[in-house]
Image (cartoon, rainbow, N blue to C red; front, side):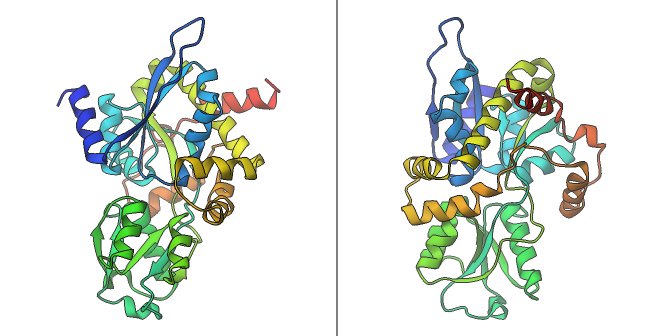
Length: 319
């Protein structure tokens, strides 16, 4: 399928897109980039902050954000339909299967998920035969649900996984009684707690990264300056979020309907889990590869933090 028509299909599958074009700089036309994001949740905060604070604009970037099924992200990157994707587990798996993609930044090393069941389920052993709602089979939330169940002495093979969709859809499925148990991060965890749902465990001891920045090797090779600009804007957003709790909470409430209580909880659980430097050690990546059960690839084919380290050096130098 042609790149442009594929992108239109991806948007249709995601239920729409959020466009945020920035005005051109006086001296040059802005460079257009597209981010594919997996879920309409607070983890998208670094991109929203980089947008609303003008960090992307200052770098001469015009950004479009497209919500997309995580399983489509790797193909969309390779086709050039999007520039970057943040869905970690699905994109990482695509990379491990040979897609020419690189991890260039990590937002969270461990997604702060919670295992939550319907109010009438009070003992974790009651989950036997129940329906587990997941975004995608063997995606991040599914893997972490299994980890949390195992940590509580329950065999995850005893539940029936059902693909529901992103966090907001899984939340609605819980409210509607379509599923019995789910692994969700903020703000959905607190929203379910407030309605009397049972929290069995969380966040995970190990888990998997909640979000990252992946791009095609070809784009990385041919457009290093654009990648540097993107990473610089996102790192500035990380620093702003970590250093400005109140302002970030107010910003979160603008792009995702939530109460002050929910946004504050989300900040304290999820935003404080952001990495300040965006890095992940090779040992941590090796652990992730083993956890996902994928064939091992040379580390240089998996991650490239060289441009990120260049930006960090700039920051350290006060530039």
